[in-house]
Length: 253
Image (cartoon, rainbow, N blue to C red; front, side, top):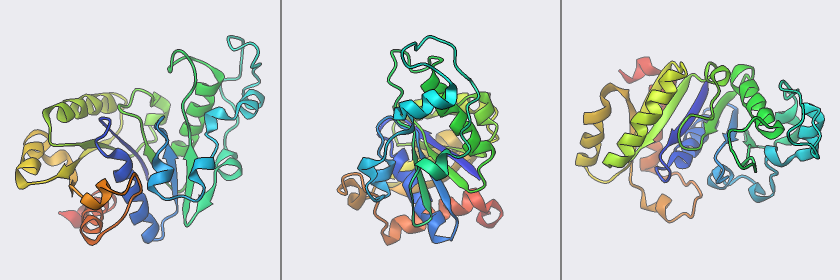
C-alpha cells in the first residue's frame, strides 16, 4: 500500500502521517516514511533518533552528480534522466523500530519544478518507492500534488487530504482532490482534523460526503507537544478507525 498525505499548510498532515505510521508499526507492518515537505518535520513528529542529523537526499550533491552523470560546475548541461536509485533507501536512509525514514529535502533552485539533476534524482527515487518498494510507503507531501509526476502517481494507492473546518481549507482540499484525480490516483479520501464540536464535523461532511475516511478531534496534548506526535487513548481510537477505513474497508461498513 502506497499512501500520500497532503493538505493546506497547517492542516496537520504531518501529524496524521505520523499517527498512521505508528498504527502500522503497532500492527507489525514495516513502513517507509517519506518526508517530501520542505519543512522537514516528519522525523520530529516520529521522534526519530537523531532526526536533525539526517542528510536530505537532495543535498547529496556528489552522489546525485555520480548517479545522474552530471557536472555540478555546469548545472544546465546534459545529465542522465533515469539514474539508479534502488539502493538508496537501504544505504543512505536510517531505520528504527520498523520505520525507514527518507528525507527528500528542498531542491535549492530558482524554479522548484526545473529539470535539474536534483529534481530528477528525487522524482526517480519517489517513483521507485511507490512502484517497486514492497513495504507500506507513507509520504508526507508538501501542499498540493503538483510535484507528483504521472508515472509516480500511478503507483499511489490512496491520496489522503487533510482538511480543517474552514471554508478556505475545504477550498484548498477540493483543489488538491481535482489535481489528484487528474493524475489518475484511484482512491482520494478526506480526513477531518482539529474537530472541536459536532458542528465542525457536520460542516466538513456536508461538503465531502462519502469521501470522508475519518476524523481527528482537536487534541490539546498534540498542540503542546512542539511537533512531536503523542498517542493518547482518544487519538488512538480515531487513528484505528482511519486505518480500518483505508486498509480494511469491508470491516468499516
